[in-house]
Length: 275
Length: 303
Image (cartoon, rainbow over all chains, first blue to last red; front, top):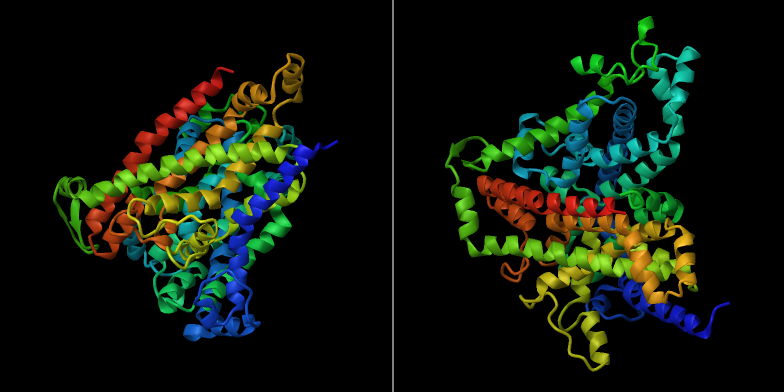
């Protein structure tokens, strides 16, 4: 079937992909395996020994086990905010898709505004301080919810529109109370899009750098992305440790990628077909 | 609540007459609305006022448009504005072209298609700061791997991040490296949705591969193009973390964007000026993105 020419094209593509995409990741891994002196040369070369364990211990224990604190903080923020985003967004998406009122236009406008408008940073900090939420994990959770709700609502609304309304009616005729219709009939049906939401939002919030930088200052509050940032200035030349840290924080997205690749792509490409 | 009674005809299927409450209760909006309203909308509205003040967080003095005057008078702040637009145009343009090319390649009958799709998409999920730091090391003018690799080919690599003329473009290229996978999967989703009949018809008409692409693939993947452009253009205008991880706006102010200016002014304690930067970015996005999406969506309607 395949001609020689298309086979050659395939090999060219594989070669190009290795140069452009694989080598940078290989570089991260190789540097994380080196000792400090060899890493300082910043070459793309095989390590002269296996130093990953030493590097790991150093990276993890540095600054009073800051990386462990950061992993705990990031996990707490991610789990709490994603859980609430999923519930709140599904509720909004459900009513928005089912009930047509003159408010729908305004709500849809606000959703699009939330996707486009850059958050007003300093006023938000001022407000968080007033609410005694500045620099706290739950304040950070609320911020992540506020910033990421619009995207999830769009995903849910589009999906709910494909669930026939007759289902709600049948449930009501069978005696379901209003809340049961949502929580026991609709919500379970939303599982595919819920998985997509969980995966896409988790990766985004776990990788978030800017918002914790602004709203969650303080070493005890470090999140995973910020350890990298603190690290860079602290070990200006300890490239082995820097890249060990990069390698460590790349593992969670890698795991997600291996298990949920399909859902991620589904979530991120929603709207590509119908605009 | 007046709206709810008015909407009754639409809800006619619901047996409201029997005194049941609607299965689509309006209070379902409430949790989302409170969080979004308090933590996103309120600060956005507050920013319009505080951008007109000299502000220390505890008290503010109204100074009219002084912050904006300063913003447009300082050459480095103006450069930040120009850089932001260059960055957004460059990244979204490259993502459209490269993403489309990769999608055509990766929907064709190529070997190792699964591997290629994965490897192109994976950087999307990796920490932006991690990518930024990695490429900062790779782009070092003398010890970086990129220039060492170019030296092997006999090319003297430039100072990617140290040359003021090049720094912004280098960061934009890394942005494309990290983000093109998203554009590619969006295009792939668009391409596979094109009915095969069109290609069949084109084949019967004797269309060449190039005509296939130009007259079938390209126009019919317009929704994907609209999504890619809108997403990456907004992302480009708002970009902060990659710039901060790679150049911190340097050398000098050569790669500053509005978002990095906002952060720098915030760090320096110029809260009013920082907020004015926010308003400028808000207006910039409004002025550029709203017409852009309107154009993209209108053309879609002709088909």
